Picture 1: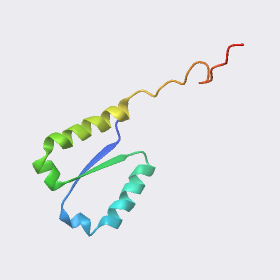
Picture 2: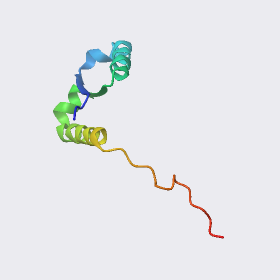
Picture 3: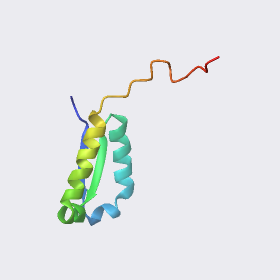
Length: 79
């Protein structure tokens, strides 16, 4: 299974380049990628939290889709 995940670690300069980041994310999303961004400080000071978010995202991306109910989700009332 291919996971199309991009992880970006941003420094303070990205606060000034926010528009560029938004446009790049829109483009990458349009071709099937998911982008996760973390601040440098988060990676340095909270690597466990960053790792947990990565795990959660990867699990969500690789989870099989839920099957619809066999009855189409409708229950008939008993007469």
